[in-house]
Length: 395
Image (tube, rainbow, N blue to C red; front, side, top):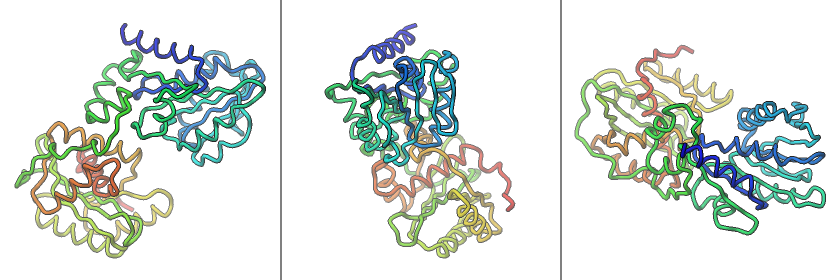
C-alpha cells in the first residue's frame, strides 16, 4: 500500500505541476513511460499538434509508439493511426507526431503545443534545445515533459531538470514503488547490479560514476585455478590497425561458484596480425589448460560483419570458436560481471596483465579505453550462460 501511495503521489504531482518543462526521473520499471504517455493524452487540446520523441527509431517503433497506441486505444482516445508518416489523430482532433532523434536536426520542423521526450537521458542535449524552440503553436506557450532514468549529475538532464531552473520541475519514483511489477522483479534485477548501478537504475538517483562502476578492492589475486574449471577466451576487435582502440582477448574460467580472470592479450593489430595472434593464443591456451577452451569473438553488425565473421572462423579452423551477436549497451553487458565482483565471486590469476586490466576496468564508464572491459564482459556472460554447452557452429 505504501508503494502504491508513493507512486501515485509522484505521478499526481507531475500531472498537477504548472512548470513549462517537467522531468519525471525514476528507476527501470517505475512507470515513467506510462505517466509520460498518459500526461500527453490528458493535455492534448482539440486541433493542436504535439510531438513524441525517442532516442532511436528502433526505440520509437518497439517501445514508445507501442506504449502510446496501447494506452490511447484502451482509453478510447485514438481515432486513427497514420503509420506511413508516424502520425496519430486523437478523438478530439489533436494530432501527435512520432519522431526519433538519432540525428537531433530531425527534430526541426513544425511548431508544437507540447512535446514528450521518452528516455530523454539517451538523447543528445541538442535534441532538447531544438525541440523547446518548436513549442510555439498559437498564442499559448507550449509545454515539454521528459521521462528518463538518470545518468549522473554531469548529464544534461540533471542540468536542466535537477537544479531548480526557472519554469522547470523534477519528479521522482523508484522501481520498487511500482506495485504492478512481476513478483520478484526488483530482487532479481538488484542481484545483477552493483551498488552504483542499483542507485541509478533502480532507485532513480543522480549518481556520478567517476570510475565507481568497478572497485580494485573487490578482487583477490590467486596463484591457481581449479583443474576442472570451464574456460572461455573472448575477443573484442578494434576497428583499425594502430588506431585508438585495442583488440583484446580475455581468458576467464569458472568453477564452484567462482569466476577467475586468467589472462589478457591486447594490441593494435591489422586483421592478418590479429588472426595470427588469435590462433597462436588458442594453441597456447590448449597446451597450458586442462580441458577445452571455448573461443568467442564479437561479430560486427551488417553484411560486412557476416563476411568478417566467416573469415575469422575459417582462419581458426580446428578450434571451438563462436561468433557473438551482442545486444544492449556496453555498461549493461558488464553489469552482471561487476555485480559478481562486488560480491567477492571474482578472482584474478596472478600475472603481468593485472595492473593494466585493473586500470581500465576501474576507470569505467569514463575511461579512455574499454576493450579489455568489453572482452571481460563477453567472457563472463558466456560462462554464466553455459557457453561450453554449445556445439561448434557450422558455416
